[in-house]
Length: 438
Ligand code: HEM
Image (cartoon, rainbow, N blue to C red):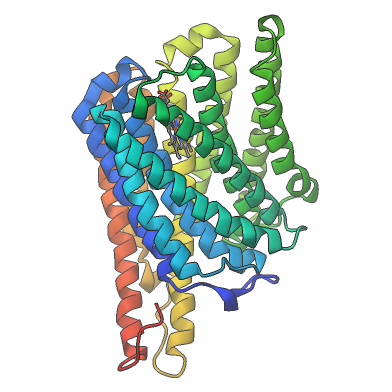
């Protein structure tokens, strides 16, 4: 495995720092699938139902949030040369706060009771505060000229906006004081969450990991210099446009959102083109996950903009369920899933490399994460996503879709646990009689 110049692996945190998050993520995906099976076709009645809000957050905060928080804590020292201070303590605290926080938020929506929601607010609020403070300090020290660092900074900024709006909205459920501004705040919250926190982090991280893991040429310089800043600025403009007088508001918001969509489209098309120019011609699971993810992103963007221009199309795709499934399950979950399949075996190989030096042979990446298991899981996911999207048009499809999605999440967990066991078994060889470094 050739290591990228400019990467500093010597400061990588102990393996459990990212792993506790990676191993939790698929369990939230599985809960989301169980919820879909339980509520079935009724989910499609309206997006404002508690069951839909619970499902949304099991996927966004549970699966995506866990994986993204873990990946950032791992990547900051490596790509930015600026580790998070006290990584073990920070990771433990953030994990212990966010994990029950997401469960209680989902439970609060589902059961409509005040206390779970209030405790969830406290846990999520403090979990994200610790995470943003720790990661923010590390990003402040990081070199300002790295496009990945810049993308991460904007993504963390968007997370702060998303979490603040989410907590304000959650207080409605915790204390029943229905906000007059509810719909506007929800639009702001979900746009900052999906396009800001998720979208900007994926874009920023891609600049580093696509060329590194998929052996493609680098992204074009003008794109890496401007795209994340431009999208962040557009999100700010779009937020201000929400408060313009009614006569101009709609056109202004449509214009801004269309330009932001074009920005993401350019990113998706450039990524797909770079992948065509990769040096190693045979395809692997990560590459296929990313291609699938980029295609879903393009479809989601086209559907989103078309829905704004042609209201009938918006109504047809059932309250934007198709769009949400395409963006969340099709784009974001696929990209994160694909990335886990590179980061996890690489991390284990890397940690074992230093532990086993001179003791025994280090297992290679394919032994750590065997290809057939990854492929099986990938095909289940690729089958689940189109069914999820189509269930917006024909709700009974939610049942097979949820079954496939849930099975894919179980297999993902199995694959990650397998790799982790390889690490533990080999680490035991190296540290016989010595205390473990994790
Ligand atoms: C501190 C973390 C968060 C909290 C407390 C929170 C809370 C909430 C609440 C209370 C609502 C419902 C508003 C209402 O019905 O009045 C909501 C909606 C929503 N949230 Fe969050 N949220 C958080 C993070 C996120 C993140 C990180 C994302 C995306 C990445 C996200 C995506 C969404 C979406 C898409 C909706 C709208 C769902 C729909 O229209 O059915 N949330 N959130």
